[in-house]
Length: 280
Ligand code: FE
Ligand code: FE
Ligand code: ZN
View 1 (cartoon, rainbow, N blue to C red):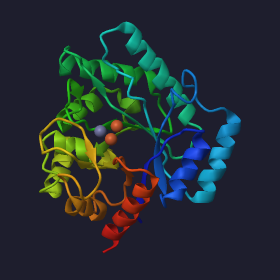
View 2 (view 1 turned 60 degrees about the horizontal axis):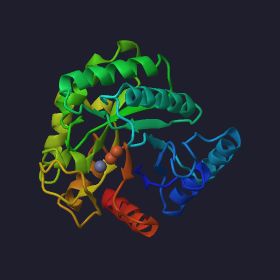
View 3 (view 1 turned 120 degrees about the vertical axis):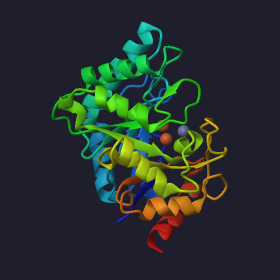
């Protein structure tokens, strides 16, 4: 059965986010862990907010909630303070997410800002080794990146290198979230030959690590390294490729999250459209 949802704002709290997801016909959703604008320095919800959140999720049948780390984090920053802030914040968020059944935590691996990818990969892996622990319930997802600027994760090999550098004791809790816009912008032929991209992912990383899909069209041509999401049907990837991912035996059971530039009505429409594609 298809699991599909979209990114929703946490303005007003987590329960409000879950209600927004339900209102567009989603059965899952993605949200930022913290809203720097809405909560002063961006604190995590307290227990009364969480009680309400669980009640709304349960009533609406929402599953696999996906927390997305704020964009301000950088595991590879040049400044010690930024790396320390990133590490402390991520540790706090991972501890917090243990309360939410079936949650996953997605983050952008990092920007090496001139250090080079190899050094960046070492920094990312060593940070994960410090903040993850054996037996944690939350799955930590490395997102595939478009390769804009000095982003690490612009190809499957870089993600594989991070996974290989993480301690075996926690590696089981590590997975990958494939963003269709990012892999397209990163140079993979997800538009014209999605099956080959699935096969390449399997060859380099292994499909057992693929745990979620960010389902986005792209404003730019393949290999542009831009990272500009587009609504489905208006971009360079197109619905035929989306249909392959929604129905392929290797991907159809994963949770799908739309991060297209839509308001809630637009998401409701895209979710309906994706359900149609999955079923016909
Ligand atoms: Fe992302
Ligand atoms: Fe994404
Ligand atoms: Zn993006």
